Each structure stands twice: as C-alpha cells, then as structure tokens.
Image (cartoon, rainbow, N blue to C red):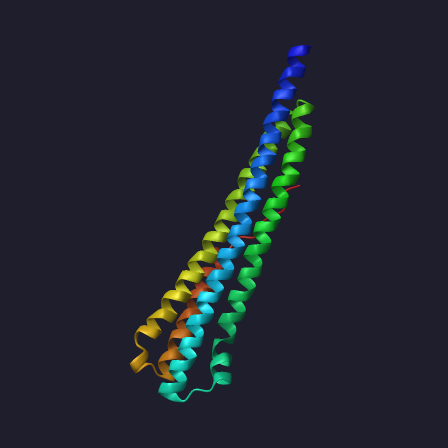
Length: 185
C-alpha cells in the first residue's frame, strides 16, 4: 500500500511541477502582451508617416486618411484583443487542467488523465495557431504599408486606396484560417 501512496505522491509532485511551468508560461504571456503592444506602436508610426506623406503628396486630410484606414485599424484592434484574450484563457485553462489532472491522478483515473492530456495539447495547439495567424496578419499589414512608404515620392491617393483594398482582401482570405480557442473543462 505504501508503494501506491509513494506513486501518488510522485505523480502529485509532477503535477506541481506542471503548475510551476504554468507560472513560467504566465510570464511568457506577459512578455507577449508587451510584444503585441510594441508591434502596435510600430504600426502607428508607419501610419503616421503614411498620413504625412499623403498629406504632402496629395493634400489628403488626416480625417480622410483615418476613414480610409478605419476598417483595417478596427480589424487589427479586435485581433489584438482576441489574441490577448486567447492567451489569457489558455493560461486559465492550463491552470484548471492542472487541478483536474491532480484529482484524476490521485483517484487513479488513467482514462481521465489521458483525456486531460489531450485537452491540454489541443488547447496549446489552438493558442499557437491563433498567435501564428495574428503574426501573419501583422506581417502582411506591416509589409504592405512599408512598401507604400518605400514609394513615398510617387504615392498617390488612388495607389493608397488600391493597397488598402488589397490588404482588406488579404485579411478576408486569412480570416477563414482563424481558430476559436475552446475552453477546456
């Protein structure tokens, strides 16, 4: 009987180590929030510079520029919120899963342990996919806006509108690839 108790203690220690790992993931998530915010600031700088170039080249008013960029900015804002929420929910799911895992292990419910393990793996894959999708969208937007800045001397309002249309189309194409992070348990 003592051997079974020793095994349960060892498994509980493993779960506790998993909980510690979750705390490390929490720190990484906090860092990711900072990187998302930093990427946002970079894009704001690019947009400000684009607005200034278009104001100089084509006398485009700031208000008109903001109207043209509105849909894309709104999309990026909502995606940032979505990614941050997915990260936070994923972390919470990991914490709940660790608690459920501890209970399943102490009750020797191996079927439940395997199910929780699969849920954890699925949750992490979905979070990773969400982050990668956001990164692709961010890279697309940054690349296209920087391309406009590279041609600043010949940048016109019709050219700008054409690139915005391409960005919107590209974002729509990428949208079906998005996943919804499902709450575990």
